[in-house]
Image (cartoon, rainbow, N blue to C red; front, side, top):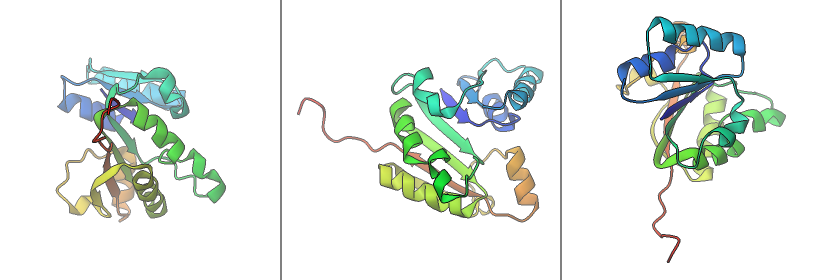
Length: 179
């Protein structure tokens, strides 16, 4: 199961679902009006492997079991730029704790943004929490990393803005609980 948090109008989740018809995609969005647009897009594309939830990411553990998700995607999340708003950022350690719980042992978090300060904050939070970082780029469109372009990404790129991306995997435990 792949989860996109903050799916917006649904371009990323629907294109991902179209490319991987054997995988289940879930998308959550707090704004019900925007979520309806994403649902309509999935319906027009006749996708049967996409589901939508109108919930807040802060309640993730209420909706998913431990280790249930294989992938979490965060695309162009609100940067909450003021220092006192850091706890609202979807890459803050409080959210990372939830992702760590619901991601499978080999699960991964994919994060894209146009905001350099949010990206730097996120790299620090992810590595500080213990995620293993890879495929880090400060200019996604100058790499050959696989990429589905979101609505925001298309607009920001057209303005000449760089797109930042990182993949974060859970750290494996070398010891079992019985040792």
